[in-house]
Each structure stands twice: as C-alpha cells, then as structure tokens.
Length: 354
Image: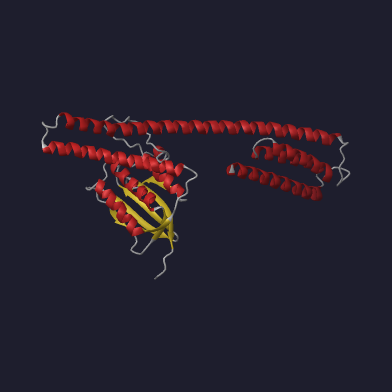
C-alpha cells in the first residue's frame, strides 16, 4: 500500500513539473519570439511525456485537458480569457486525448510485458534454486541414511575404528546440513520486508575471533591470513548475520577455489565504514558467471554427481541479502594475480579516546 501511494505521489509530482516547465517555457517563447504556432506543439509534447512517464490513463487525460485550457487561456486570442468557440481548440483537445490514450496504452502494455518477463526470470531462478537445494539436501541425507544403516546392520562385524569413522562421516554431513538450513532460514528472514534488522554495537576483534574459531572448527587444516587495524573498532550491525557472511565467504573459498594455497581476510577502516575482503589465490570464476554469482546458484556447465555436495553458491546469495539489508553492497571480482576477491562494507561507530 505504501509503495502504491509513493508511486501515485511521484506521478503527480512528475505531471506538475512537466506542465509547469512547459507553461513557463511557452510564455518565454511567446514573449521573445512571438512563436504562437509552436505553443500547441509544446503542449502536445508535454502530454506525450506525461502519458509516457506515469501509470494508467488518468493523469494523462487530466494533463491533456489542462494543456487545452492553458493554450486557450494564455496563448489564444482573446488572451487570458476562455473562448471555446474556436474549432482549433476543439481539434487540439481531440488530438491530445488521442495521443494520451495511445501512449498510455502502449506504455501499460510495455510495463506488463516487462513485469511478465521479470516474473518469468524469477520463477526460473526459483526453480533452479529449488533444484540446487533438493540436490544438496538429498546428497548428505542419503549418506547419513546409508552410513547409519551400515552401522545398524553390521554392528557386530565392524571394528571400533570403522564405527568411529562412519559416525564421523554422519557428523560431518549433519554439520553441513545444519549450515545449509541456517543459510536458508537467514535468507528467508532477510527477504521478508516486514523484518527489520536489530543493529547493535559489535566489537570488531570479538567478531573476527568468533568467525575464525567457527571456521577452524570446520576446516582445521586451512590457515587464514588476517590483516586488520590494531585500533579499537566498533561496528553497527547484526553480529550473528555479519558473522555468517564472513564464515560463508571463507567456506566458499575452501569449497570452490580449486588450487588455492592461500586464504586472506583483510579488514580496513575508512571514515565511517569498515571494509572486509576475503581473498584467495584459487582458480577464479569466468567473467560471465561473476554477474550471476550472488543469485543463489552457480551456472555450472557440469552437472554435479549424486555423491557430491555441490552447495551451488546458496551461501553467496545469503551474503548478498544480509549485506543489502545492512544498507551496503557486496562485490566479487577476479584478482589480477589469480583467485577471487569478495568485498563488502558496513557502518562503524565513532569511538572516543576514553
């Protein structure tokens, strides 16, 4: 409802501005050049622009009527008086109304076509995302089911080492499922326009400690080179969501940056912003795919095997939604030396010397 009101108010303002500019421009032309013949053309142009820029037919028709009245009153003899006996005014009114109806009809059709196209693209993206999620959830669930069945059916024949190994695999798949569900719940929460983020003061050092601890619990063999300011920095953010963004970006590098030997987390502060960069020296991403990297899936040319957890970049879609909800933007680009650079910024708070 609020969006509709904003649209109506915007259309009214646009109509008023176009009519005012046209009227005063016509007065200036008439005084300087006595170009009465150009005045109707200017009003016709104004009606066309209004019909093109506003939704529906109402404002276009109203502007056509106002333009006819303005032309009759200010630019047709007798000046500054209405005279509806002149046939030219009636013809002008008919022409403006026809232009308004035609332009408004075409504009409405074009907008409907664009909305239909956008909706079709959204449906395609939802379908692709649903297929990706279905595959990603099925793979670990199948593994958990198979492993648990093996333990139950062959418990007495399995050594303690085999049991620990199988249960460890179940735990790993369960952890992966938990992270997937966390991401899906987060993006559902962020996509709900009625939900507002509750920002609080977050100490940067504590946030990074939590991120690295959680990441190293999942990937104990992967080192992260940290470069951050020594000074005390406080962020204005939802700590849990920003932590999730950083963990997702680090995990994404481990899962997808083939050939990676170095993973960096660089943090810098500029005025009232803190910028985070997650940099790897892996394989990078094709330029055509970078544009779609935050849409919720990777446009992989190879279909994932049933035994693989492909993850499909859902975590990156979550990152984009979270940063957007914080009023920022997140970007991805290939590094010149190879690999990827993910960058985003959020607000920081001023800290007194005390």
